[in-house]
Length: 505
Image: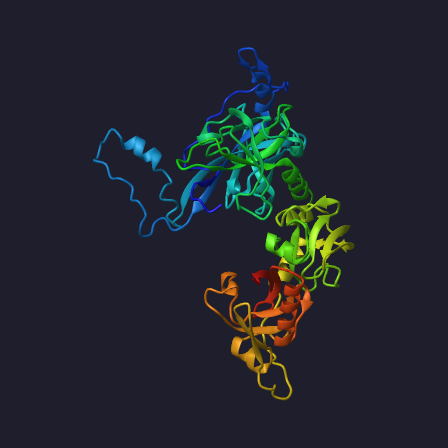
């Protein structure tokens, strides 16, 4: 989401010297299910009492460099003997930082919760502890323990910490099944809003599967339980006292709760936490394809009854399916038994799958459903491979000079043969093949789709084209079949593929 009102439920930042406000809590868990009494909802005091001991405040400190330079706020100068001198000395102590390094000491507060009392494992948000020099965990009984970082995952905004459990009895909570939560179910949030530790708020699940454009695996639970700055990393409980979400973001024009908060579902978070505990990093499954949404136009062009699944726009060289198992133009509609309703479903279910697992993938290829077997790679390795792909054109095609370029006009485009001359003119890589687009008519159907001169048509309706005549023949055949749209696979100058549909009426 691009709105400036979307905030991480946000650690609160303080000048050094600020501290969390802690409250006492009972240590013996006791759960109850909120029900409606004749005069309103029943009390949730028993549920809250059993959970408060497992919820912690996360305090971090960080040295910010360069605060002595231009723009820094100078320390106020008071008259000698001023009665406010002690107050200002305390407030501004260390604000200027160490004069040797010009740093400013900044403290932040967030929330977290214990999931393993014996090992001292605490879960919070990555953005709560990001760039911290020191991390402390403050418990509801007033005890403070130093924490070490076990691992973080920026894609889901999850972090795992460890404290020494010796000499202090910890209370832990467990993850529940977020997939069982329904819109309207009761939930409870406990955290550290604005530094007020041990704050309990209650609400319902307002929505599920929210995509707020904060990462590749967005699948948030939306709740109207009050979540404010400082609640980040705190748990969202179901009525059985299980963690079904990690509070991480809010929408707010004022910075305070307006009843729209977002939590990472436990189904996603628990797997990440397990990997961070075991490896100190994530190890996600990887399919090795580039994908795009299946629009109504694309579905119609492929002969699909409904628009669903993820359209494969390209296959990464050296990836798990570079052997032709899955091809550009395939539509993935089911992965390892899980339906892929829309494009964003695929990255999430693939990432949740173990590296090296052999899975069945149901695809639609040229209008026919078929199942292929794929062995998954590791996403973290794949990201390095994908970023290292070289699409530059260093070696031009050799041989005799190509004959004069023949051209054709179709669907608002002028297309021509792809040879040495056009490759050089548009800087097209040597490994790109097809028919080059040399011009696009303004306000045409092609222009509306963002097609640019220099792009190369490699397929039309999943059939390869190599000459302008091929393009004309394929468009003519589609019109004879009564198709309203033509599905084009286009290659960029460096070979990256995408699909577009163009109206033919």
